[in-house]
Length: 138
Image 1 (tube, rainbow, N blue to C red):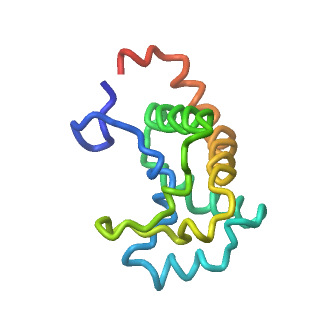
Image 2: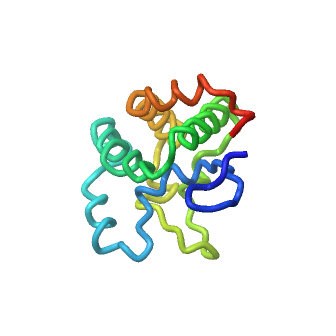
Image 3: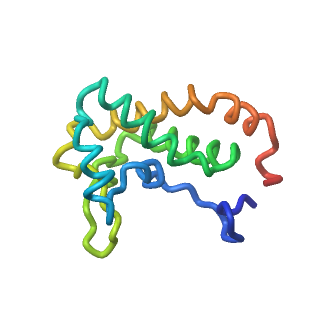
């Protein structure tokens, strides 16, 4: 069974992990201000957000973790009823705060679709390696 990095807890990929790189709680005056220079609804800015903040924040994951997370994202995108806007919502019981809330993201589905495309390009070799293994042995 695949475990969380650095622990013995079973790894369950959550789509919210894909937004870790743009979480600004307690970093509003540093990362938050930096991210406000970008418009997540603009195609060029979205590319920068994904390639400069989102994907690098996941570099701590092994190739197996990346594979499982991306498979989870693929499955969620196939289910058209998945509400990706919820991932941008503020939860007052959770200190996690995303740089833009659900009212500022015009196409949350498209945002995650782009994360999928970019991650498949950037992590191509890792994803191929993991796919070639027997996942039941993890």
